[in-house]
Amino acid sequence: MTATMLAKEKGTDPPSPAVRAERARRARRRGRVVALLFVFPALLLLGALVVYPLLFSVGRSFFDASGTRFVGGDNYTEMFRDPATLKAIRNTTIWVVVAPALLTGLGLILAVLVEKVRWATAFKLLLFMPMAVSFLAAGIIFRLAYDEDPDKGVLNAAVVSVHDAFKGSPSYPSARAREGFGLTHGRDGSYLTDASLSPGATVTLPMVGVLPKDLPGGASPARAVEGGKARADELRGVVYLDFAPGGGGTQGKVDRGESGMPGMKVEAVRDGRTVASTTTGSDGSFRFTGLTAGPYEVKLPQANFAQPYQGISWLGPTLVTPMIIGAYLWIWTGFAMVLIGAGLSALPRDALEAARIDGANEWQIFRRITVPLLAPVLTVVFVTLVINVMKVFDLVYIIAPGPVQQDATVLATQMWLVSFGGGNNQGLGSALGVLLLLLVIPAMVFNVRRFRRSQR
Image (cartoon, rainbow, N blue to C red; front, top):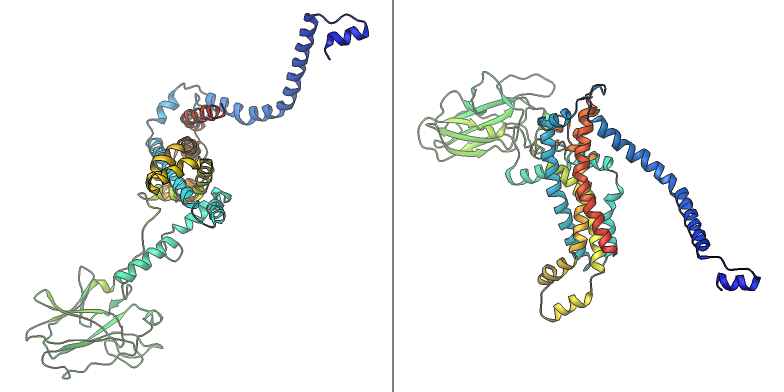
């Protein structure tokens, strides 16, 4: 029932158009006031936590380290002259180019493959679980995983195991010859007998520097070699640990209780060339057969005493940034997969089925139908990750050791280091914060516009 009909029933004149318009304006005004009252707490928080810090940082960037002297754009000029800042910009560029592209690609591949897995939900849950881990905890996890000590770092433990399986490990890295008993230490780390030996001779090679408990499990007591027992074309000897548990014995002589050193590589050298090689047995004994007459020297190659392979320096200056990006991929791959998977589930299935009926294989469907139809979703995921990697701080600060912190630094960590981490120059740090904001804004504007277009 209209206002005019109600007025007629009550015997009053209907309100004029001007009155009705005024009432409508008052109603809209009351609605705005109520809306402002509801939104005021959020606006207050936004102003206190975003707007005020932003304006303060912009203003602070025009003052010196003490904050008392106005320096204009000197901080921005210094920022691009500082080698550490230039390295941070370079590393941030690497992050922006590499990490979002890899994450978007991995998310797309996993989203497509998960659709064909029977336990797809469980698989998605497993991949998404790292998102529940804080960057602090993830940084500690990967700092331990990348540790250079194979006894701590799981990656180096695997690398060392594979290396030793194919190339073996040094037998006795701490061993050395007992001085004054016929062995000379070469420049390359090997040991060579002082005197020349002829076929039919025997030689005793005493070693020290190895604890009995560090000997191989198959080591057995050494046996003394006696002259005259070798054949005319044979050269024989023993390499043993010249140490008897409990003390006693004679240096340079095989005594009761002294152990042979099994697995030691031994070479027969003539005129500077290796003519025969062998490995000591469990009791440390060795022999060369089929030798022709002439002078020989017995050599213990440097490979017996080399330090064991320790793996790769994952957190060294060369690899630290790729390794931190790897930790970031572990955390965010599930996020990309879930978003792309949501877009994949909304694709028109009739287009995919029509392509299969027309004879297209799965690769052609993926490349020519799935990817083009998912382009809007892939773009949103990529831009969102670009914004995220520009602000990465926790992983870089925690994973990178102190000596290589400058090699891994990005704009966010450099801003903190300059402002609070020893630089104490909050003017330059504020300038870095403004630079980071200016780099993030275009990506944010792009994302907002895409959301608005998709809503329309």
